[in-house]
Length: 136
Image 1 (cartoon, helix red, strand yellow):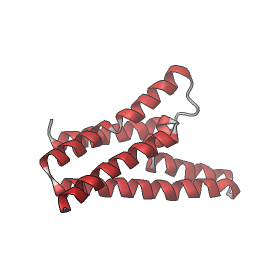
Image 2 (cartoon, rainbow, N blue to C red):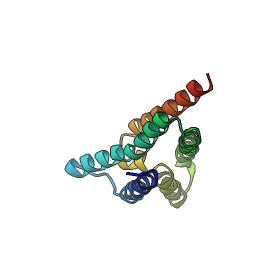
Image 3 (cartoon, rainbow, N blue to C red):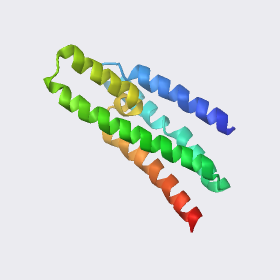
Image 4 (cartoon, one colour):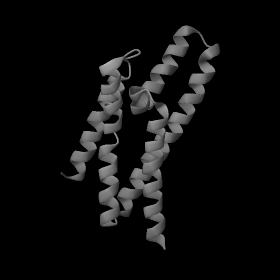
């Protein structure tokens, strides 16, 4: 499967996670399905990272590192805004949460936020280490 197809698969998984992130308080099998979907979201970037490291593809590693940094930055800002929205009106708080769902789709979809943040951190670390080794 080519690089382009992995990015398409990643986009489809993002769309699924974003759409299903709006499911309120899933229980039982629905909860498990959403958690597994959120984990599957990280398969395409992991494969892309693996191939970029294997092929010593520096531009691809830099692209993946940038995606990780941007995602973690957006998540940090949206989480802080979400916590601050306690003092907002109900509509404004709901809007901020919707932004969080869209900006941090696998995190909200999977319901266990620390897992998603950890996996983004793992991807960031892998790309950073590969780029650091490349410079030495």
